[in-house]
Amino acid sequence: MLRAKRLARVLEILRAEGFVSLGDIAEKLDTSVSTVRRDVDHLARIGPVIRTHGGAALNPTEALHFEPGSEIASEIEAEAKAAIGRHAAMRIEAGQTVLFDSGTTTREVARAALARAIGFTAFTNDVAIASLLSTSDRIAVHVFHGRMRPGSATLLGAETVADIGRIHADLLFIGTHAGSAEGLSDTSTDLAALKRAFLAAADRKILVADRTKFPKRSLCLFAGLQELDAIVVDAGIDPALASELAERNPRLELAGEGGE
Image 1: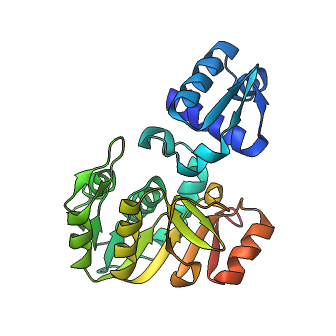
Image 2: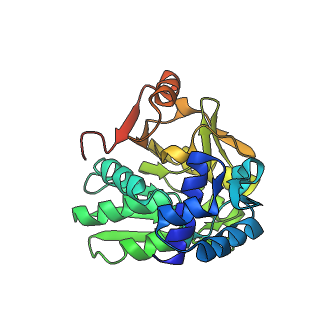
């Protein structure tokens, strides 16, 4: 198993179970305890994990603000993100102008849209999404100006916000660091400003987020659930939580339901 995928699986295990011994993690990953110890030590150094005697636990404070590098992030709930991507991409119609927010789930929407082989115009602040979509001669790809966010494929800043403000798009696929019945939030004022600009630029606004984003609150609120035209989350979400979100926005859709 590649290290990025292993680190993502460690985070998934800790998120689901709380404290877990190194031996139990090693058994779940079919790897050695010494390998798991190195992985846990690495995660403890970069923030989201608390190393304990013989095991590890998720640091709840750091988890609200921590964002893994894109290599690890793309492996977290990878199957759920792919299902969300396939579900959401069906909304794209030929000839539309589509905004793609930066992120690993929006990247899966782009991947699924590419597989549909239809023509549309795409704008994004994510260089990985732009690179993916540019492999099709049917998709006109535009990348917003801005500064690169360290450790990610994201462009952001005042220049990016200004670029987005000049666009009127048919459709937006947007992600979030955290979500709850209270609304959507992200880890910095820069990211929150970027998200608000995206929301103002599109006729239809689709949130794509896997179940691990809920129920959480990060630093800066940027939108209420009622502002969205659809919320696409994977079918693995807790039914009670799905009901709570649907009370705020009945346009909640579960991707992967019925074996999609």
